[in-house]
Length: 405
Image 1 (tube, helix red, strand yellow):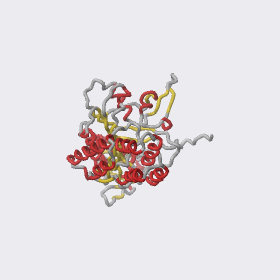
Image 2 (image 1 turned 45 degrees about the vertical axis):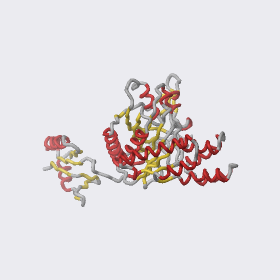
Image 3 (image 1 turned 90 degrees about the vertical axis):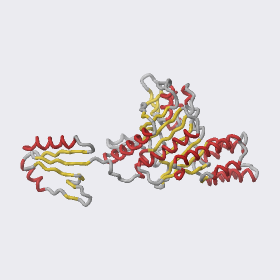
Image 4 (image 1 turned 135 degrees about the vertical axis):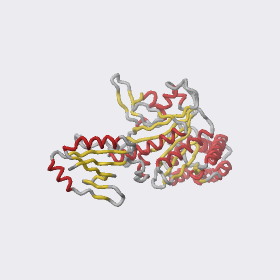
């Protein structure tokens, strides 16, 4: 195997240059501020966790975890999501805090992919966990907050699709009782959004015509609140009916929030995380073909850390959101260049200090070593642009101040 060159990176990771970092931090700041206004307090957990605890409890399959050995030979993992680490903290450091807990985070997470095109091994998430509330109101709260956060991040057009793990579990168990492998095969097709493959899988099963038609009808369960009535007519399974009733309750609360225009019910959707137990949802921007946020209810996870409690939450895919938001400069600092000759050092630096004391101002200084350099610089053109900014040596500034006699 050839030695990598000094400027190469491992597959799936990337460098963020200053402009991208500024955009990422603006999104992060706006979203965390939005979460704080809803009562969520930020938490930071370590990048490394023990495999036997958080790693085993995570949403990520074992083969996609980055594993390392510490000096004692114990296997540790780089965090692959934030939900399991926060569950660990809720059950330990926060075990005596009353429920519900409202926690937020912004962190990088890691997944080991097989060099798949476009798949990132390291990416950024900003999200919340609401621990200790089993109600439909709690599920609606995290959905409504996800909508508020997408707006705060600058995503203009998006839809939130709501599903429920219980509906498909109940429907498939009713139709394919004790045929676990066949149920899982159908779920996998739906998880991959492979509706053609789902229909083909149904044709390969030995089913009565009415049962096959019923299971194909699942693909049409996508729309507004009317989907609840259609879904209830499809099944007598209690688990499936309870799931539909819960989604109807969530929808009613979202209407009270005034955000139901952003939401649709999609009962073909199942969460791709193994710990989901109830409602799941995904947010799609019209400018991207993959989700910019996802979340759901995971009522069994905390019992793995000896503090049983219901929980729900979501994560924004922050670096994906960067791709669909424009170059908003509203929060960019006012950038000033101060050029000065050596004999005017004191005046120039005093001016720079005064400017830097102002909110939202970035000041750069440029010293010319000799008077001749300063004289030459005085002849250099500072180009005023149509938007009121200046261009100097290929860099754009909001203002250029000279201290050169």
